[in-house]
Image 1 (cartoon, rainbow, N blue to C red):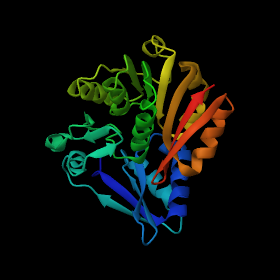
Image 2: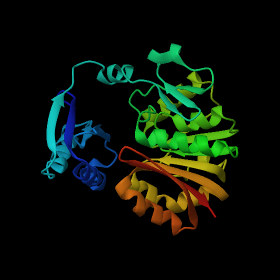
Image 3: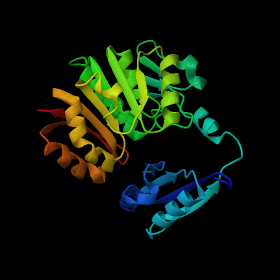
Amino acid sequence: MNEPAVQIVARGPRAEAEAAAVAVDNDALLEGATYSILEEDEDRGIWRIDAFPTSSEEAESFRRVLGEFAELTVVTETLADADWLAMALSGLPPVRAGRFFVFGLHDRGRTPPNAVNLRIEAGAAFGTGHHGTTVGCLKAYDRLLRKKRFAKVLDVGAGTGVLAIAAARTGSKKAVGTDIDAVSVRISRENAAVNSANARFVWASGLDHPEVRRDAPYDLVFANILARPLVSLAQDIKGALKPGGTAILSGLLRTQERYVRAAYLNRGFKLVERIRKDAWCTLVLERR
């Protein structure tokens, strides 16, 4: 942005915050925009949306959409002229999700000996492991690993690469990640190198890239994206999976669960498990 970087914060009741998040997801001008939603004050029932616009136009769109919800208090905060993202991440605690322990460089001396330790640096990519969607995916994957291993894994919308890296570190012979953002692909590759993980990342939109098709069909597909892309990719994800293969889907709000689930059940999947964290939901489905 030409103007100083800003963060837009909206606070209010859970129902209003969740409805606003759905409106953000459905706004064409905010497709792919970065925001989070979480419970800020359990005693008072206050939920919070944090939006991080990357342009003046995107900031105006966030303010317009969030401003339509009368019970939300919306404020715009100017971020300091510094590497604010790195500063914010340096204050994040490590995350434990089943056997996985996700940490940043600042916590490298705190890794437990009995965990699969994943050092993930976000940079400009999504997916440090702190977001409810990423935690849900890792927890779901950990539970699946108690019963079986997955030789070939695909991570659609890899972000920082944490899910594909987790697969590679737990025995998957093929772990492929895709993202439509070239910066995310670069960061994923850097994170794979740091973690000595044999995971491959490609810059691709959808699942038709030759590097993705080469290892298909997969035993497991992660897709931690958004509700609308999850629905539009349902048939492609089915095609990328072996019969009996598993899909772990996230990036959807609890209010969007029925919409996404129906798209997959209608294509012959069955629901195995759902995991909810904050306002977010993770679905584990099996291709019949």
